[in-house]
Image 1 (cartoon, rainbow, N blue to C red):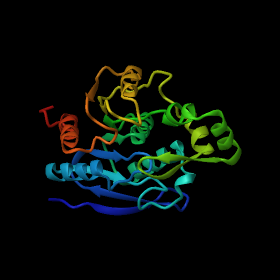
Image 2 (image 1 turned 30 degrees about the vertical axis):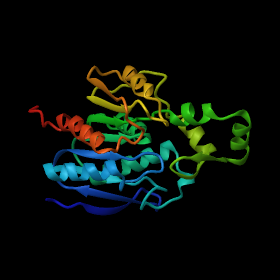
Image 3 (image 1 turned 90 degrees about the vertical axis):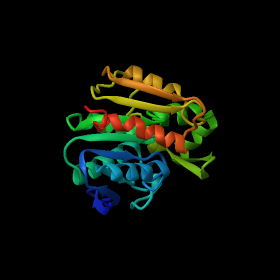
Image 4 (image 1 turned 180 degrees about the horizontal axis):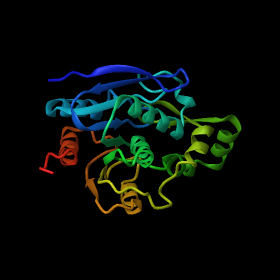
Length: 253
C-alpha cells in the first residue's frame, strides 16, 4: 500500500503550510478541513485509508494557524485560508481534482472550485458551511457583542469543542467579501452534499439553499436524520466513501 509523503510549503510570505500527499491515479482527492480542525481528524484519516486502498491520489493539508502549519489562528480569514488551499493545490497537485470540504472547508472548497473551474472534476461537502461568518456568527451576536467585537477586534465565544473560540473583526469583515448564498454559484461540476439533521452548528437547510444556488444540474443532497455536525461515526464514514466512489469513476464511468 502506498505511503503518504509529508511536505512543508511556503505560501509566499514565509509562513510554512504542512501537507501530506499520496501518489496515485487521477483525479486527486483534496480534503479541506473545517474551522479549527486539521488534517489529522477522523474524516481526513479515513479518506487517506480509503484512497490508499484504491490507489487514488490524495492531498490533505493544514491552513495557517491550524494543526502543524505556521501562523496564528487569529490572523486567519476566509480569504487567507482559501489562498492557503490554492497554494497547497497548485504546488503539490496536477490535473483534475475532487474537492472534499468539511464545514468551513465546504465554503473554501466552493471558493477553490470557482477559482480553478477547469481543474475541478467534482465537489463533495460534509455539513458545508458557506457564509457562516455572517449567518452563524455575526447574525447570532447581540448588539453589545457586536460593539465589543468592532471596538476590540476580537470576541471570545464559548465552544462545545474546547476553549473559547476567538472571532476576529477581520474574519467577519473578510467573510463578507466571500459570501455565496445570495447569488447564483457558477459551478457545472457534479456536487454532493451530506448533512446531519441533528447538526447543532450548521443548519441542514444550508445544504438545501446551497444546492439551489449552484447553477449546475448534477447536484444531490443526502440528509442523515440522526447525524451530527461532524458526521464521523463509522456509518457516516461509510456513507462518505459510498458518495465519493462514483465521483472517482468507480461506478464504471
